[in-house]
Image (cartoon, rainbow, N blue to C red):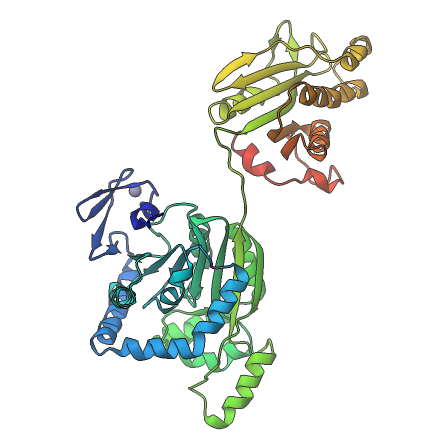
Length: 483
Ligand SMILES: [Zn+2]
């Protein structure tokens, strides 16, 4: 398959697709434009003042680096000290073979160049166009073609949803005041099961001592305010040579990642050669020892998170919805009111929806009703229950008063099982209103008749059911879309 860099791009703001006309890429949603210049995607229309300032600073730096060929020395240094350790650790988190790789804050993209041959493609995004020019120059010299370079804001990347397998940020996310927003953006572009791998300064004795030399801000209340006051207000940020930079506790990193939606998150020491050039020689060996062996002195940690594998509803999905309502005469009364909205939500989206409507005690009629929708149309309403539900019928009729009736609960459970056996397909989703229906769904999952069970409650109270099975995945997500 030929690599088409444009296929990864989308509007940085509304994420709609782009139309290419000459060197201009225009958003089909909001009309915003990006530009392609000499193979680099440029995008400065939505840059904040802050970003424009740091962009200017970085551009000057990289421009000089390109002119005096300093990047060659930098690249050699990177290869000597950091490259192998970094690749090894990335590979531990996710095998890089055949992946779509994105590096945020990629600079000259040394790492991307080194792994390009084993990836499907490498995408580098950086705020500095001049850095990307160096990257491009080096990539072309190495005859690497499966790359895409984007000048852009990491908080608003011009990249499609769900299209990246691995994201790497080497000391990037600590430079955003709002780390959470940054992580959400990474989560957005990752495909399900995609891996985000970031290295950040660790908050420990190290960040409180030597890292203060360059004005690191510990990201915990009070210390953060003090450090910001000292470094930015009092010292005018003049020695903050990496700009605004925070260090994090492991627990903060975990919760920030989980809030962004990541799962399987872990934080561990980032194994890397330590130089400590700023320390006098006599101190170096002691510090190196401490930095390797004591959490209190680890300089950097890696934080790795995986995007949840959320099976999406699609036009090939099938949904079985077990619910109840009150029937008067031959019509459903709108007392529960959940059926119509659910139906209207699912019917246009899925291949097949079956609603099992169990008349509430006190209704006219006691037998469950089935509505089956397929390809946007109501397909059938007639349904005859199996004998074991007919067997219950006279007993149901005897206890048919508006109250909680045990026998009706048994009917509910059996009606779900009954339908599942009559309709031979395996449903992708089962939505069970209230506990008995959810239980029936769990039973169906156990015997392989449904994939995912969603426990749907109206009047939720957390400790009503002790059974942990009820707190199943997806429930809020799917149901909130409807209710
Ligand atoms: Zn747009």
